Image 1 (tube, one colour):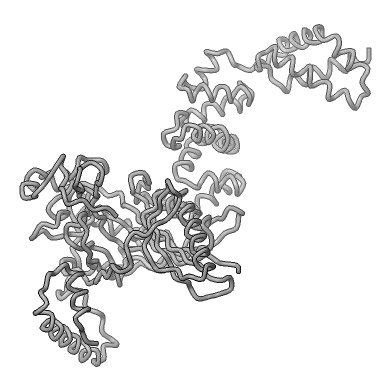
Image 2: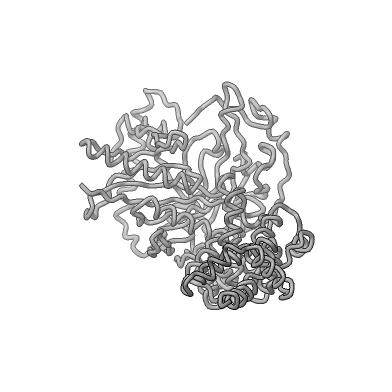
Length: 486
Length: 95
């Protein structure tokens, strides 16, 4: 039988605020344990939560960017469960009335097709603390610095039909929250993580199968692996005549498998109810419109503008706008040249991206800055260096040897455009290449063009790549033509 | 809907309440009575009434995004039964 996977994602995004969602404690990663956990975060008796205005603003920003409905009235609710890193015995979240609902986002698939994924809701909530099982023999250590960190949980519709689609969606949301500057999106530090809901059904069936939920996946690669593992596991279960149970799973990237996290006997009953400490959040149209007016340019708008303003292809524009950092790098570099957009784009997509991949670093900390790349492209544009030499200069810049101009000057890489000097090399090469010249003379005219290549190569070698290839070609062709007649 | 012994025990477990066997019958009756009241209330026509999220007619107060709390870890940890390297210690549990 043909099976169709059905996938929905719940993405947790930590918001980049200065302070926590309900307290004035610092929201900063990496502080010493429990130094950023105040009375509210610890759930000490008598401490009361007060909502951070920035958190609300960020949620509305996100909602507007995914074309969603913004709730004028939303309500914080208590989600009750017991866990050692949840001091209050409940997590403050939103349940029946989330701040954002009914949005959508466009994703591009690997084959170039475009698909729309529905966003059911996005609600605000607080993060829990962290449990350390390793460092305290016989005990678990609890660090509550993360308790109260603002999160927005983005719940998609079950609109995805393959692991690749889920990854494309996750990347799109990741790019968007970075564009909106509401999160640093740092996946290693847990700022951006996701739960994957997966079920299967016979192709053509419209009813949903029983789903499993794989929790806390913190990389794009693991999402793809976990979903693919789960799809194959479920198909094997059903084809063996058994049933898929609704359960919560954890993905183990080392073994590349999912395994049950909580047994179904203890299926959680969260007993949500409105938090009496927090009256409803009420906002008006004016508030929403103020935020709309402050929205930055979004990926889609940027992509169009790059095509219109810089004459880039759709492919190039999509590549350059996929992340805000890359788009910013591109624009900064182009601004420092005389409109060499296409050249800059090519260098970012080839040499720069190869170097970034090789050293596994992000573009915003690239060793060749946008200004440095622009400096190099300017020397290509004014014929100071050829493309080939430019790659050599780029390598030297990457190694920290200075600016393009410094390196060209120091290493004497300036392209030779002095006709007299090139002509001298051409004459030398012709004099040294008796056999090849003979071959050239005896060749039929249609084959002669190909034989010129040898001479060009020798002249370029003699000039250590610095002779202007175009001039070399012109001079050689003219001279050989004359000799050929002789 | 009415309660039996198992539902009472389940609810007690969810709330981590230790109740002794003799009191279960009493809870069964009390909880069943509460649900009976809910059943009566359900008969009231509430079509045009917004659900009540909070008894007070006020909106939430917001605070500006600023760090106003200082590190008071030493004070807070004075009441903790066990701490090491700034961590609160609890009996080991692993998912």
